[in-house]
Image (cartoon, rainbow, N blue to C red; front, top):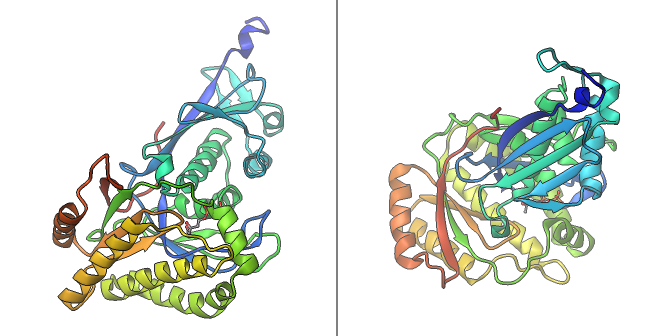
Length: 362
Ligand code: DP6
């Protein structure tokens, strides 16, 4: 084989990662560069079918630069978050050998080889449903496979964290806890699985996809402004969240929907209270989000106990957890009656799902 011929190989890996929704919220960093949070958080990972990212990563000696395409459009990889993730992954890369193709890449070669990354979200990125969480988790997972990293999921989670904080929780399915950690270098700030996706398989997720007319402040900027200006945020991080973390872990362990719902709704409401306590105030929910929450609150009240839990992140979409299939069906009936999906209204569609796991798809 001539020299040029021997350069014609391409190695690729495709992975799929779900997004996650926090039930104990991460909001506020103590270190902006390493993405170290001011409190622990807990999330539920969504199923792959409805809310996930698929990423193909490839390497070839013919590639001249690292390149990235998101939903078919090329984006620059020069941002700090991408650079930090790529640097960390390259530093942990292993040897790769494919005898059939005559490929041999040593640990050292990775420093000079360039990557092409193509990523697709199977949900509208503009819907504000945590695309950065599934995006960075998927990127790190796919690159770890391609580059034969020997690191465990804890280490991969810490790398994904440096792309986007919430991404560290998407490395696992089911119920996941992100430890804020104490070390300044971030070595103890990573996520672990509390319970797998089969642990509570009655629990169903219903997402009314609410459109957002105005551009929201990104989570990164919003939480920076909250840390700088809110007086409530420190009280929340130090006094409220640690207790709720213990209670939420207990609720998940015991599949105690009453406690799960009480804590999830209280967390969502306090997170938005912190947003309002920020200067200038951050308005992430809109009228439709408020009306959906009121509808759920009224229903829970009329039943005498929580049937459905709600939570809303840095956007207008409300994520609902129904305690079982029967409740989910009744919930959908109610929602369709009060908020029929229509292209001309604020309510675009509904997504139904359960919890799931990250997958290597080829
Ligand atoms: C409201 O992970 O998107 O969804 O770390 O700056 O990338 P960066 O922020 P990001 O923030 C998510 C915040 C949240 C709550 C949560 O997921 O816990």
